[in-house]
Image 1 (cartoon, helix red, strand yellow):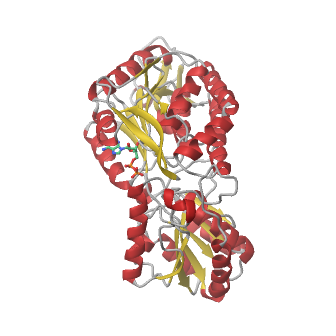
Image 2 (cartoon, rainbow, N blue to C red):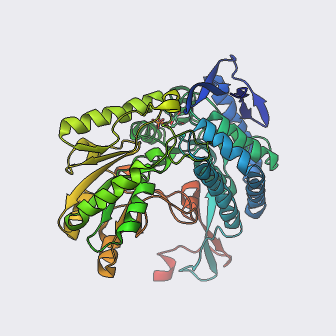
Image 3 (cartoon, rainbow, N blue to C red):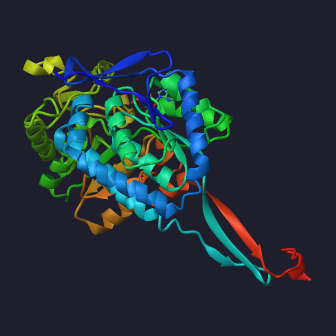
Length: 498
Ligand code: ADP
């Protein structure tokens, strides 16, 4: 046990408690009784102070040249590198993922910093001819203003970086409202932004409950944009509220991602991909593989290999060196996964392995769920349609490529997808016909890289893409600029038509 960390809000460059000193605690999901951190239960007045701080800082930050803003972000990347190991350990302790994955979480933040810093020297607009003589036309990207960034616990460093870094390079100021389960990771991250020398108020940290601090930001009249990653239920509230209050809004919500394995696939490779995609991060990724769509000719063999591999996975605390699968984030989520197993059994699915809360030895001290494989799943069962967010994968048998793609597409979501095949024609047909924001050929559904767009179709999102240069579209608006150097009034569509 370590002494709990004391986290504070970061407003206008100051580390502050909640105005009424109320606080909450975060824990270690591998050890139920361990408190990792205490953090402020922010009130409306704390949220108002954070918004006012971001608004004030925006006046000057938007005027800092984009390449100079980008240099701050470059430095954030360097400082993140310095603290990579310390931060990875904290992620493992507070969120639960194995250290190798926690290091990846931080590395994604570093990659994002370097990539986004480059955008500070690009952020290209267009020049285009005017239809009038002696007139110049161009487009420029404009910052939007004060951005509220509402983030989940599953990537406590990478997701805030994905949002904050492009927002800041584009000239916005931000208020990060991190998840209640990972306040210490967010605090360390914002300390790193501060150490990189960002001016006061440019990045603010507002801890607290979603329904309190988060909701105030979403409803606040002086917040211009909300970027949200989380559950579909909360996303629906955020989207509706932003619609009503005329805010820009970027939503990234659920997934029900599938990996297809065709009869001509490299089965060893496909099994390896399935194990990583389904059970990596204990299935708690929005891109996790939760359905395996298997051609009937290889289903039996594939399933046998998958079961053998999955049975050997070692559960444990993320910071123990031999752990392959960490805990579920909290009791509520553990019970939710467990409830889906009851539903699966009622619906007639067969539990091939797992299916229970893991309680052997030390595991009973944490929130562990056994890696679970469900067989005899039909496409319309709830376990084949609803996001479970745990180490649970459903096997669905198909007899053709066309049927596989139809079943893959038959969900409300459309984030990630994968197909294993050696047939180039099928691979390209899949790339065209799969309804998802991300498609992997001969790779698992997880593994996004920061310089490519990230997001999904249908109910996964609202049409935006994070990361890549597409992040600029979230955090800027276009301005069209016309410069008339003719010295006379020129009426477009009129004077050049006479
Ligand atoms: P999960 O169920 O995975 O925790 P949530 O959607 O509840 O996902 O949480 C994602 C983020 O949204 C967290 O930072 C949480 O505090 C925040 N949040 C939850 N409810 C609201 C709300 N009503 N308004 C704004 N933010 C919220």
